[in-house]
Amino acid sequence: MARPKMLKLPEVLEEIEISRAAFYRMRARGQAPTLQKLPNGQLRVSRADLDDWWARCEQRASAA
Image (cartoon, rainbow, N blue to C red; front, side, top):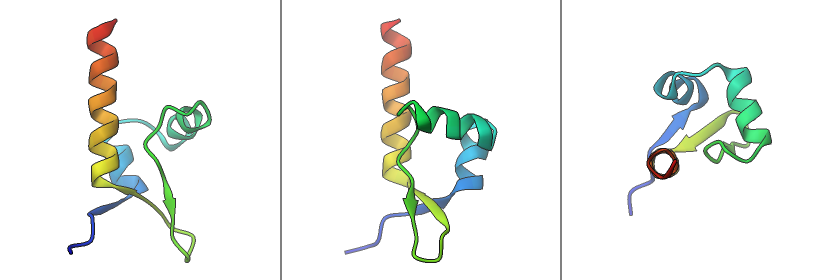
């Protein structure tokens, strides 16, 4: 089984076009993609989690 694609936090921030501070504010409100902390302290977001997050954002936008 192939490992899921894991994105570094700067890659995620670039894709969603927000600052690190804005990302952490969203995370505190429970509105950000799920972060996974590696044993070396680095942060990653799975491609699948980010894609699911995008889909939820689109659903909320279309419902508004």
